[in-house]
Image (cartoon, rainbow, N blue to C red; front, side, top):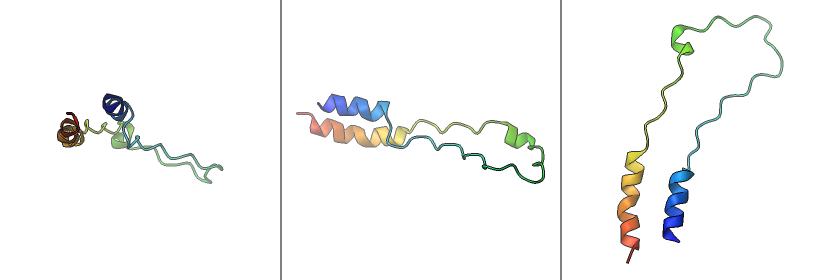
Length: 65
């Protein structure tokens, strides 16, 4: 049972990635300016939360007999 919760915790993290904002329903009156080179690059993905997993490891091992 405990292993099931651990597996579900790592497969489905509690904080999902933020969803992109929805486009406006009506087009703007003036065309938007061209994006800058910094906006063309994709934002870097956040690193895996090693702190979160290392924080829960002592609690997991303390639950084991």
